[in-house]
Image 1 (cartoon, one colour):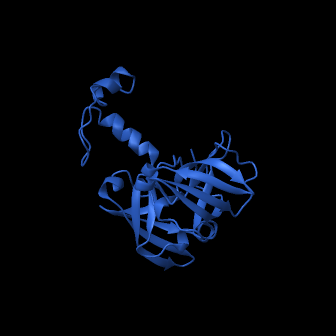
Image 2: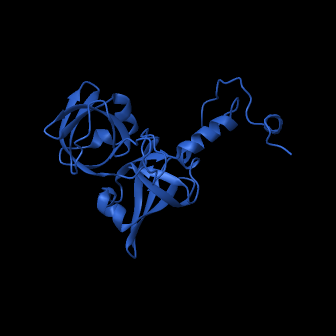
Image 3: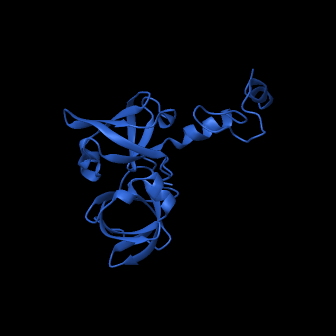
Length: 224
């Protein structure tokens, strides 16, 4: 579990193809001396496991499924990436709960300067905007951002100067692809409400338990 508050930027120093999988080698641009083999690290929003550490360089394996669902397969040697180590119990939760499980890929459609910040418009599949609300949270390349406005197939958010300095988001240009993870809580709420039903655009669920009903809420003390 992560917060979406990127700790710093790393550089891809090696990419090795292993069948359908990839081994990424990343050099963090900030101290990660306490990192151990088996630790989880968010790389542009995708949760990866550290499998090798040598000379302060991290090796991480990327499965074919992760390559399919994220932009990691498009990385090249020399590219920079957002890095965040997993949240520890007792840490401050300054962003929002981010699982590191990317829901889909978005495309930068607009990038406009607004005083000291930048306004980004990101086009996404309509299935993702179903989990977005104005002033809600979204992770873009692993960065926790507040949604200014949503549309049927896009959302807008601001990049403040601090976020621009500490992440790679301002390196993105119109047409670039980014990893998107929607708010975890919204997905659980949908599942509870749709037990036995079907969400728009999705395959029917094979679940026998009923969804949330007024009767069920009354039985569990949520009525007058």
